[in-house]
Amino acid sequence: MKKILITGGAGFIGSHVVRHFVKKYPHYTIFNLDKLTYAGNLVNLADVESAENYRFIKADINDAALMQQLFADHGFDAVIHLAAESHVDRSIASPNEFVFTNIVGTVNLLNAARHSWQGRFDGKLFYHVSTDEVYGSLGEEGMFTEETAYDPRSPYSASKASSDHLVRAYFHTFGLPVMISNCSNNYGPNQFPEKLIPLFINNIRHNKPLPVYGKGENVRDWLYVIDHAVAIDTIFHSGRIGETFNIGGHNEWKNIDLIKLMCSILDRKLGRDPGTSARLITYVKDRAGHDLRYAIDSSKLQRELGWVPSLQFEEGIELTINWYLENQAWLDSVTSGAYQQYYEAMYLGR
Ligand code: NAD
Ligand code: TYD
Image (cartoon, rainbow, N blue to C red; front, side, top):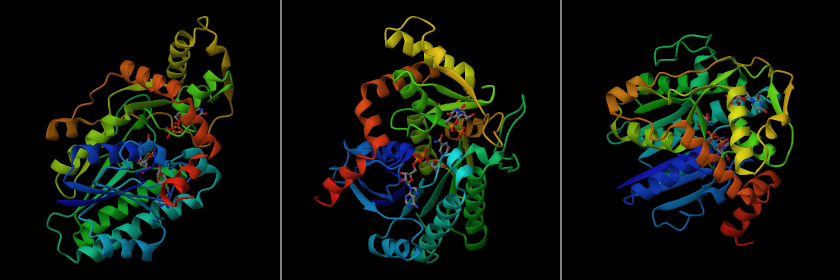
């Protein structure tokens, strides 16, 4: 029997992690703690919300006293920490929120875990979910390994790097049992349509311009979100305390090539003449400090724990596009904010 606190479980990756754990581990109780910011959506978890082993807690990780109280009330054995502000463009427009949630919020959880576990660390674990963006930007060659020096360049990646450092500091200073994973860009169902793939699918469908930053030559390494959830499960159960693992699918795409691929798949699916959707491509001013290339070496995870991604990208992107086409109501509700009403109806009886 384990009580696992998953933070940020109503978000994109968190909802897949929560579903995976609720379904695969009926003997664990999964507590999903989420503030429900614009990015948190309980509709993502409608299929598991009545499961016996699932509980939802609406709370803000910036509330230190509440975090202590929740640990005291529920006696969590482990934390899988995903709650964060996650969008680079928002971090450029408004960095402070990233400092509060990603850094201070993480410290609040570390303190609550440390206080609650009181040095009795057997069977306890604080698992921190992080990003490859902490390593900075690559040139044409090379990959990020677990030994790559941190060099974050956006307020988002700097805040995540700080949180990683703090998690490691609690391991070295207080002996808190921690693990960290740094993953590449995720794609798949339920991603908020401010990120490249869902934004562009939605825009293509509605014949809206596709704003390509700069020349579209930046490279990202894409991993299907459920493969990330499975990697987290693998590391959570089989990783060594204090270790870091990189997670990625060896799947690099130049933005413009990916965008053209999405355009051609959507031309086919929407019955448009080939080349129709690509005419929506509009080159716009580059993102400030735009990292050129991310590429992650996940060979440690593959070698030591046997994890491999289950999907080829061609398969994953088809599944993803199908999901957004079939779930236009989901897209409409998250962009309109109507999902807040879902929370009120489900949990507050309004
Ligand atoms: P997301 O923005 O979709 O979801 C974040 C969730 O955190 C939301 O449900 C939101 O309501 C919640 N949240 C935000 N602030 C909170 C607060 N103060 N208190 C409680 N809950 C709060 O993000 P995502 O893309 O699912 O990313 C999840 C985690 O994975 C983040 O830590 C991110 O840094 C990391 N990550 C993301 C990617 C990616 O490609 N999206 C890749 C690697 C790592
Ligand atoms: P994004 O999904 O924001 O992820 P990240 O910046 O964390 O990698 O962006 C992926 C890439 O797509 C990145 O190089 C920026 C680019 N991009 C655009 O060209 N236009 C857009 O409208 C967005 C949101 C992103």
